[in-house]
Length: 118
Image (cartoon, rainbow, N blue to C red; front, side, top):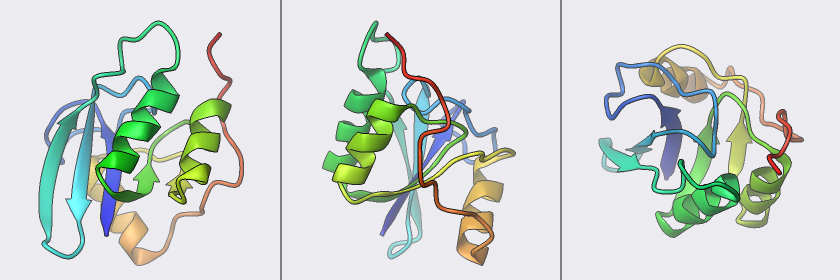
C-alpha cells in the first residue's frame, strides 16, 4: 500500500507541508517494499484546481492513504471518489507522520478542513 505525505522538501526527515494541493512535494512510502519515493507536485503553482489535479496525480500513482495538514472541499471529494483515506491536521516531520499513522493514532478525515480556492 502506498501512503503519500505532503512535504516541504524531498526528504522524509523534514516538515509536513500543511497545504495539500499546494504542497511542493509528496513523500510516498510503500508499505510492501518499505521504500520511499519523492514526487514533485506539478500542480502546486496552478492558478486554479491544484487540489483536484494533485489528487488525480496521486490516484495514478496508486496511493491509498494521504497525510496532510489541510485539504479543501474539491480535493477532498476527488480523494473520496478515488477511495483514498485522508488524514488531516498532521504536523511535525514526514517520518513522524508515518509513524503516527502506523501506530493507529490518527483520525481519518470525514470532511474538508480548509476552504476551497476560487
